[in-house]
Image (cartoon, rainbow, N blue to C red):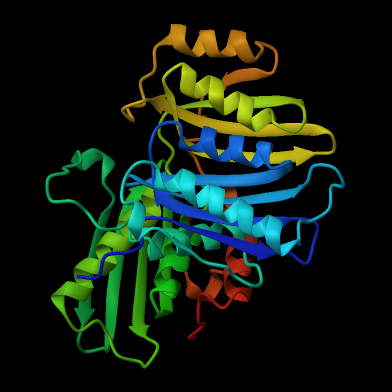
Length: 343
């Protein structure tokens, strides 16, 4: 079996206002703190970022500008230094020879790019000695419908925002075409059924491929399912803010399982999902309060996840591909070419 590169750094020259950094590698406590510290030392301002972790892997897309000018960074020597130092951080103390660096050209949708990065990093590979409670694992089945010439994919899991996007993007990136779909969202649970074929029109042809589809869809569902306590930071933005905040997390024994970093005008609006250093979502209240006092009780708040048990009205009930594109998210998927209409 081919072993994927344990970590990589990619730089994308954006045509807009930022330079985009793509990072993948082995997750560990304090990694995000070290990444942001390097960027601060190199006079890079982080305008936005998204960080996902799953199955001991990490992927992130970070948008940076020059601290002094606020413009994208395009100097080749400086970009080379940024890549080299970030790659050194990702390598840590293990597997020094197996790191690699990649440079990409162009840009894409951030969430879809994160799925592609984690898929390429093989975060879907499941270790045999790792068992998961059945209640936390999505139910995915893949069977061939011989009389129709399709492969039928069924999945059932807890409903959440962007679930449809995540599953369809994954099937598309695996080079499958969705010909028909049925989506049901009732209360806290979601059910999805897809009729798929390869691009050449053939169904899935082997047990190994069938299991791979199951593993990849399970991974796609769980990447965005955040574990831990959600901490929301809202304050005046400044260079080095993320480096300081994530350093305080690390010094108090907290690991970041997911992060969403944005700026709105001169305000930083960030969300961090934190666990203990071992990855357990239960964190002592006194630890969280100590972190809040150090960062600022008024700017760092604990946010309880409050997804409604009833999805929005337009997502209720059952609908098939014929009326699948009525909501904005489904129209977006169709415009990206992720679903093929077959009426």
